[in-house]
Length: 218
Image 1 (cartoon, helix red, strand yellow):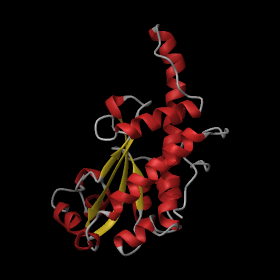
Image 2 (cartoon, rainbow, N blue to C red):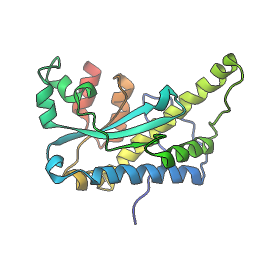
Image 3 (cartoon, one colour):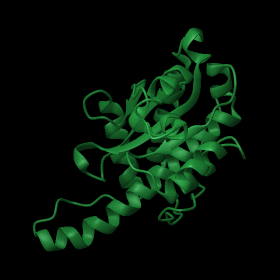
């Protein structure tokens, strides 16, 4: 039986989501995430897997709407890192700055076009968390209501992605797909301390230390 993950542990360096009971919609969304991401990793060829040193979990808001977070799964290779050294400020930046990565898309979970089922599951999950809000009729009211809710949605989504990464490690999905354990970088397009801390939470102790050190000292 395939192990399920539950998004119950808050990550440091983020707005800690308040724990609350969840129902079938949360289970459905978690299962959808795990199914798509595990399948994407399993699709990597053996020839490519040997060159991969990190997996990317890029969190991005569709249409810049924090109520529509998506997860793009990709990876970077030693070959690409070596190729990027000429353009980066140093070897570490070439290795860890997503701007120099392949930026490939194995899957985009929650995308309205490529994953409509995931987008629907995400909206039901948001409702299950009690964080869904109606479109505001007044701009000022919208900012005061939607802003805090959006921040909580983002925090829950980051937590869910981190817990998914841990589950993929503990169940052996990453090791079986790539032939060994590599860090999962849970990130955005910019880097700051919270990115380092959530990546630390997403991986077994020590596995992402090189990335974490680069972020904290960049």
